[in-house]
Image (cartoon, rainbow, N blue to C red; front, side):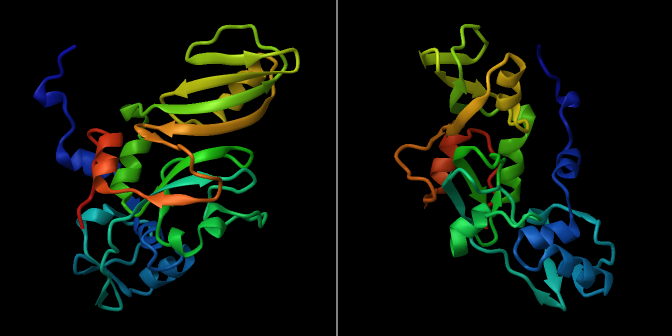
Length: 242
């Protein structure tokens, strides 16, 4: 079906969908913690494009505003995007209330100011993209863009039922090895799918995201991506230029 020009979202509408609360933006950009940002904003210490903002939830598009704290402009860090092999047993969060190890504990200084574009649960491993480009992160995780994700999955028992998007690589009475492709990353979607037909997922690894492959990258290691690699892996993605 042809889409007319008038049905396309205006630039302002697209920006509205990419807005982030100011306190979260300051935290994600690595300027302050979320709590510190909230206090600084309420105290009138933060300017957005020259205007003092005192509402921590004030919506901003980080790529389109100038941020200053105590009248000192905060320059945006150089563009960085990583391909990371998340190990099993770490969580995809900056802080965990249960004090479990996080991906940022693994990454150390390399993970500073980066956000994960999508998640993998505690028991899952594989390819994660981390970036300081919030516009890119939003674009590649937007369900409307249907970026393919490919997983290698092991389930308990012999699976004989055919499922769309699922390829059986090997099976026995004890377990079945499969390749699964999804077009969006809902929380624990694969585990719930197989549990619904009586098979527990015992191993899950994401090996491909868009045009990026995990390759031979070992668990807990990463490599820097170039803009050219990202453009080739995610055609049409919005990439901010510093």
